[in-house]
Length: 101
Image (cartoon, rainbow, N blue to C red; front, side, top):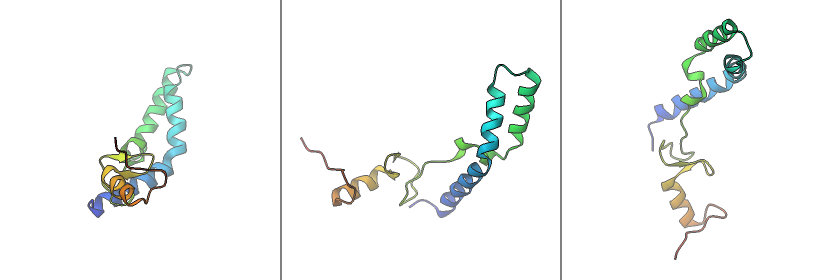
């Protein structure tokens, strides 16, 4: 199990990303728009810098839903590789079978 403080920190980041998502997307679109004037693009970049760092979507870490483990997480299931194996062997994940050849 991951440290509870790390899991909570990631949850706070998710909330901030959700809060600033619309503003971030509009400013990012303005900053990347080549048809706009250079000063408008610069102003958009400066306003992007004013958004809190944890409001950036790249700062959110994918974590396992059950254990909070940050590595080896499969997006399809939201679980790490170890949990997928354990739950798959018990038959707890529908459609997942242990392969053998």
